[in-house]
Length: 300
Image 1 (cartoon, one colour):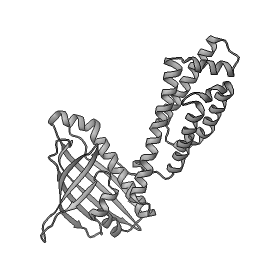
Image 2: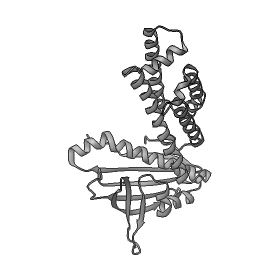
Image 3: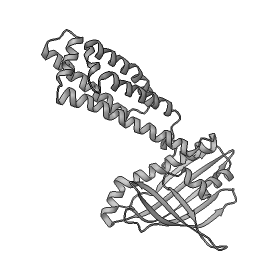
Image 4: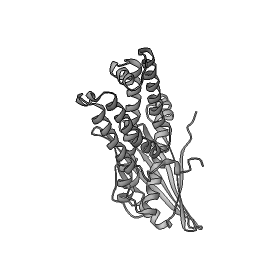
């Protein structure tokens, strides 16, 4: 079954000349497009296609290098513009072999509708095509949409791409950190191990029998696991961060009230929760106005 081409569309409150310059100038393009780490135009003769080389860093010192060719631009009578592209790579780590696409610029009053559609042949035959459809193609489509939103915010608000990407990745690193912490704290010490210290702290706070204290610890563990899952599923992370600024100090106070000797333990509730509180504050400061792929239309 043939995969659908990737389509992304966004409206930018800027004139077509600024959008054109930010997307056609390689020094500007590489700043906002998450798909490329660098773009280098090669010397060209008049009336020939513009050739370029690109590089995409994939981490751990590895980078995928490829080639591209602007095969033509078209200025229509309605002032819209189209730029066509042919690209590919022979790099062994690349899931893409070769592809084609276009960028279209449509002026609408004081805005510009910026559109792309592209498709490519997946590497590694039928297996590569299957793997591409369930892994890389959704990711590259998402990266394109996110990059378009970064471009929009840059042109409209002057918010530089580097600042936006710093906020974006800080936000999601903190999100996955809290997801892991709450899941781990609920699952390992409370449900799997039923750690004696967890039971002792619960018994010190509440007048319960041993079996009842075990049950309460298990319930708390389940609640913490659910809260960890909410960190991934719930979109408004700022509400969760504000909630944590209330919960974490309370949990610290409860633990110390139940047994003040825990303050002498390594990685005790006071130091551990204080670290989480500081991380929560950093999350709040960095989570405002995060770029998002959801601002784009992904359906033609």
